[in-house]
Image (cartoon, rainbow, N blue to C red):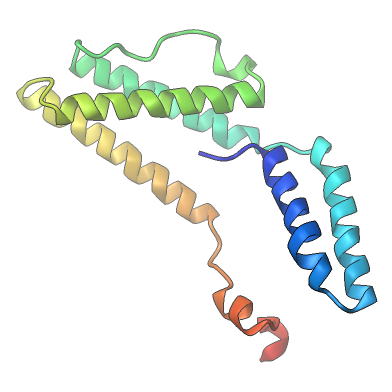
Length: 160
């Protein structure tokens, strides 16, 4: 789940204003930090999360819930509402989050003993595979943290 892009940018700007700029003594560096704030304030309204990965996630989660619903009729399958392709990015994010909650509900019900035998095992397998694939996809997008640079206060590229 992602936080709204607007909130992310607001958080960066707030951190720059409250924590970074007051502690930078060099005038040039302070000007650069203020320039970053200006850039973020102007670019924020013009960008949004990439739509295709969210659309793909909604489609996969909908298909997963339909498959689980076929295996275990006691669970409602993903409801057919607005076609995802016609939704705004914000609506897609909300739908992705709703589907994640539905997947969580199904997992809780299975954990509590709902369902029987082979169908329950297959549904659990589908759910586990989906969660594994979801996390693997997120990890591919996540860059390694810059702990060494952060701790030393230097740029690793120039420190070599």
